[in-house]
Image 1 (cartoon, rainbow, N blue to C red):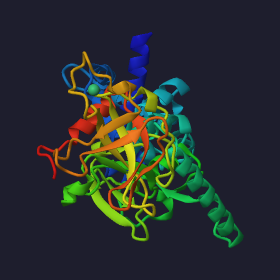
Image 2 (cartoon, rainbow, N blue to C red):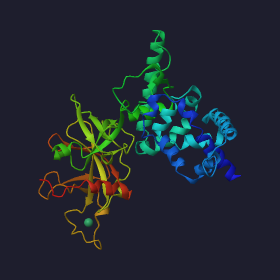
Image 3 (cartoon, protein in one colour):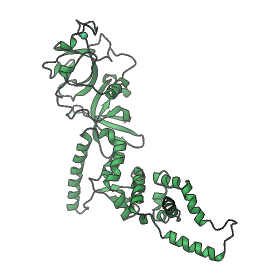
Image 4 (cartoon, helix red, strand yellow):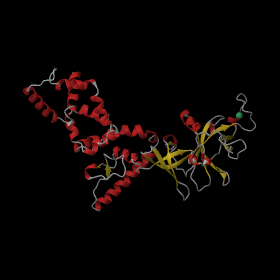
Length: 389
Ligand SMILES: [Zn+2]
C-alpha cells in the first residue's frame, strides 16, 4: 500500500508538472521557494526513481512504435493530472510543509489554491514560529485588533466611495518592495486573516508595541545602558532587523537596525506613562534581581531599569547575620554604575512605595522582581564591560 501511494504521488509529480504549467512566470522565477525545494527534494529521493521505472522504455534503449504510442498516450493522461486532484490528506500535508513564501506564491496560482493557502490554520504555525516572541503578551495582538478595526473602517469608507470592500494585500511578490504588481498578482485577503497579519509584519507595514533593551546605546548613548524602553517597532526583512519609534515628550526618536535579541514583548500590561503596582515588595531580599520603572521627569514615559537588591549600610553582607530582608528599607543597586556614582543606588520603603525621586535624580516607580532565570541572563548579557561613572 505504501509503495502504491509513493508511486502514485511521485508519478503525479513527474507528469511533466502540468501543475507548474499553470503557475505564472513570476512564480517560477522564485528559485528560493521552499515549495520548489520540497519538490526538488522529492525528485532526488528514491521514490521518484520508481516512477522513472514506469517511464523507462526498454533496457537496451530501443522503443517500438506501438510502445511509443502507448507511452505518449500515457503521458497525455499524466498531463491531465494536477495537484488539486490529490486527495485532501496529502494535499493538506504538502501545504502544511510549505514555507510562508511558498504558501503566498501558491495562493496566487488559482482560485482553489488561494482559498486553501490563505486558511488561518496554515498561517498560525508560521506566525507563532517567527513572531511568537512578541505574542507572549497581549500588546501585539491588541494592536493588530486596532489595526483591523481601522482597516475595516477604511474599506467601508472606500466602499462608499466605490473603491471596493476588501483591503488589498499583495502576494507573490510580498517580500519584494517596489515591484509593480499587475492585477493577477494582487489578491484580496480578509483584513482579519492570519495571513494578512503575517504579511503585514513581514513587509513592515504593521508597527506594534515592544520594548527595546539598551536603547540607542549602539549609537553612543550609554545613558540607557541596562534599560528597556517602550517603542513602536516595525520589521525590515532586507536587514532582518527592526526600526523603533520611541515616544518622548513632544519629540519622537527613531532608532534603526535593532536586532531581534534587543527586543521583547512588554513584560507587564501597563502604559509607559502609568505606574506599575509593585506586588513583590515584601519578597525583596539582597541578591534578588529586579526591574524598576524610572523616568527623568513627570512628563516623560517610564523605562524599565535592571538592578540587584543590595545590603543595608549597617550590614556587612554576611548571609549568616544579614537581617536586611526584615528592614522596611530596601537598597536597590544599579551595578552598571561605579560605587561613587549618584546613579549607583536608591533606597525605597517596602511598606509604602509608589514613586520616589525628584527632577534632578529622576523618579523611581513600580518594581518587578525577576524570577525567571532566562530574563536575568538576558539582562546580564547587556551588562557593560566597564562600569559607568
Ligand atoms: Zn544584609
